[in-house]
Image (cartoon, rainbow, N blue to C red; front, side, top):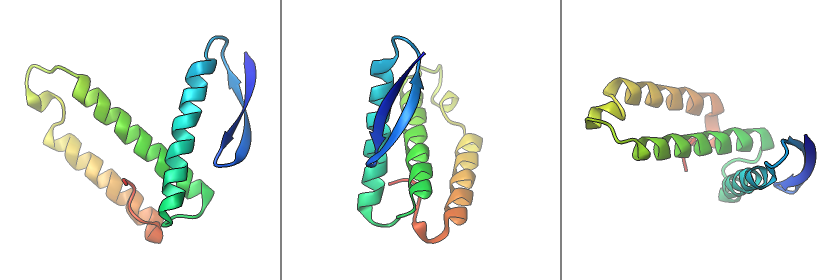
Length: 107
């Protein structure tokens, strides 16, 4: 396993990377850096740890959305049931409440 030094929001990180995974890791770093910088530039959140949480949640939500759109279910209800939507909304509300004045999770 090799190590790569990368920059995220101007800070250096030394990350372990499996052989042959450099391009994927650098792509992931670019996505995280872009997401974090976008949140910081919006001006609502300043704490680096909160920016990281919001960016992670946004990226996870985007990934889940992509997976849902790629699925070819037998019926539309197989993608997201009302129960799944209700659970996701409840989770987002809990996270919004925990983050307080920093704003909503999804931008």
